[in-house]
Image: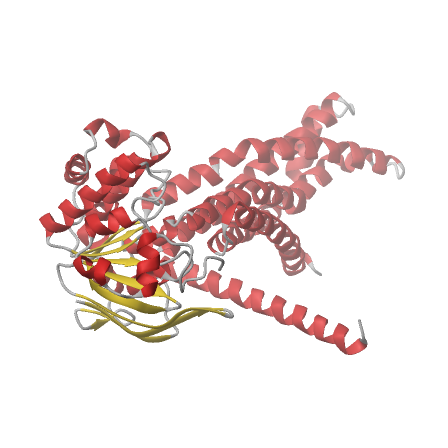
Length: 248
Length: 260
């Protein structure tokens, strides 16, 4: 289980997280929604230890993320970055098998390549893509390669940062379906950040809305439309009028 | 601005400078620390050696060649005032090996390598590739910084030695073809006056300059701001800072090696 308790984070004078409390049950898919600049990515990076919170406690299965042994801790995670974050200098298969070619999960090169090709196939890419470089791929293909990399080492926990941003609706649907299938198939715990309400409905078991640095509402996705929370209602219906100021 | 305001501004500037020196020193110590603990990334080190050493050879070689030639002309013209034209071979050799070879080689590598390292790592930072490395259980200091710094520290002295030879050859060609020196006498003068200490001091300077160049590229890349402007600023800072540090380090090393 992932637990955030009273997490605060500021950047200079800007208070981004102001006491975030959130729990994600093992095997559940949690989607965090909220306006741009509300600290969703900061929240996710705090869990991974990429950003150190100013105050508060973040634990994964009861272990404090700040004191956990880094390599073993990070070996449990896979992450799909917003822009893919593929390494330009490496061919696709080496991007996917990056973790399998170094460190404690290192395997022989041929085995790592075979696993990479299998993961590429899992996200709907042909083996011919394996030897291309990221710059030769379209945005949607890069996202899929990023997804293949995220699942390459069969992680227990997968994070998705804006998985459909910049993609057309059809490709967004493909990525959403893939994420849902992979999470169910692997039994992984998932944490996704998105603005895309189609993604929310396709991916989420539970949702949490981050606003003004705190979790404004959290609950099962089935309850989202009847939450009665004016902030959540305004957000999911995309209304300009409401308690959330349109000009921020 | 009143006097107190000026003092406050001066104080802020000095504090910011000291803080930057502290951050760079910690970054350097952190880099060196990784030399002594696995994992080591041999493929990345080899790629950096090719990128920094082999691919810098044309620019360093051309710079040294033309500098050696120009130096021969200048020394000949200056020496003629004292009937001392015969010092051309020895001064070209000593000047190239002790000073111009390492300094110009270092500056050319700073322009070519420091900028490309800062731009590459800065772009990796703004596109979240550095964060991706961390999530893939790979320490960016070990994977990106150490191979580049180690490669530059090893490759630049060799570049300097090759540059010295090419620079001396430039002086030789100008001396024999343009200034009328006897080829055998020119070579004998060069060999007789050049000592091993001249060559090794230049190579030690090269190692220090290589370390500075790669360290500054990595430091400014890793601390790059957001967007194209942030990467551009990091690149500019890496080149300017490494160039100034090379000239400062050159003075300190020259004092250490050659002061009476």
